[in-house]
Length: 218
Image 1 (cartoon, one colour):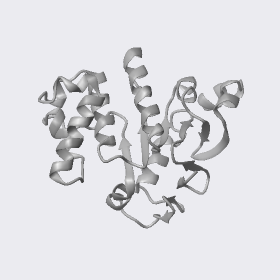
Image 2 (cartoon, helix red, strand yellow):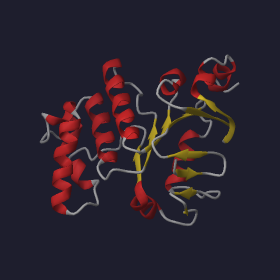
Image 3 (cartoon, helix red, strand yellow):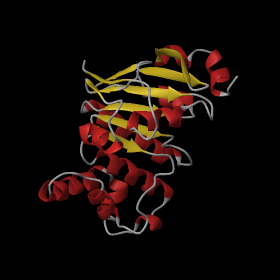
């Protein structure tokens, strides 16, 4: 397997889903923003390249997609316009990719001209995910993507993440609901106080009674 991400604390391989776990304030969002380049960082390698000194736009150009908490869509733009605005592809390829995303996300397919602010919470989250997948990222970061979503939407979203991983995208999923994230992940990385305190196979963490304490900040 190809190592996609190496933070110095853990690595992430192509096609792998890793659950990033920890209590509120444990440092999950900070770590993701560090990987993206929004924060000063300790050494980070992406796709075999040392990106520690690279700005956000260069890291995105290398193949990083991001679904932030609370989505941060362009509220006044349509579904199709949000997708187009997120892509670096040439115009013809970009339009083709928009059509592919609309076909892949049934919640959005029938509403390409709907303004983002008029969408339901589930539709907005699917749009945020589709937007992040537009340029086929090699690494996909997701920060609490299931927060406030109905179970049927969560199920659909997780299926999309599995599909992305099947196409060799590495997925780092920050999630408060440990059992949900570990249910689709191969490994879990547990943070506490901004530090990695545990890395283990998903099945091992699911059955570990100590995980509840770590998730609660104990």
